[in-house]
Image (cartoon, rainbow, N blue to C red; front, side):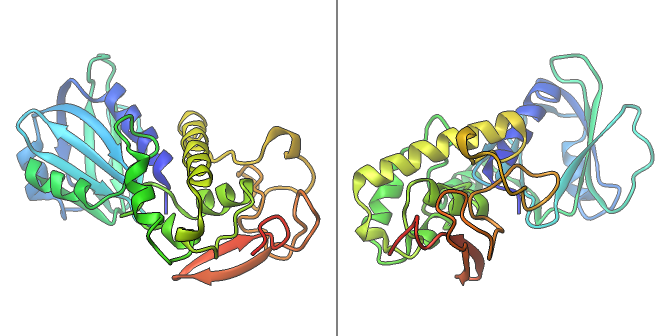
Length: 270
């Protein structure tokens, strides 16, 4: 599932390419056809992300809420766009403020729906602070973490606690600060939380700029290759049984609340 930086990157792209102008909206697949007809010909006023949620705001007050889930993806296409390929839930064509024609197809999202402002408010109220948003308040997350006996490895993945963090950032930020993912949240001290939050914000901003998650410090970015050819190196994520890049110990794996978890038992004791 895409992590928060991917949605912020998409929001920035759609803001630059589509916002400020009239858009043509259709649903070649048909599952969004009624909603697309309501939006077609309106002005897309802005695009923003909150955690793993993408929001398109229209000047009519309608908001399209998109959650990509496991399989959703936007595909850019030249304009005029060719015939749709695959199950295209929503097609957007516009020029925005740039005047340059731009088109995207959305395929396979978990959610693609129209909301009104009160429903958007209810959605965002359920989410924790997003490290990539300028209005984020890390105290909100700390309030929940410092009172919870759940492992910090679970709390970081709980979108009600902190929005946008997924499996990679969870594993890597805990490694970078030597914190066991099994440690209860109420055994974390405030200084540790402040470091985690600041590091997440920095790492995720790099992800927005580069389009990929760069989590290994430059001085450690060598040796064993990444877990996939098109991915930057990680410290522990998807490195089960391999030697830790820092201490050489074997990287461990378990399943925590249904999600794969990786850590180094030496660098992250306890």
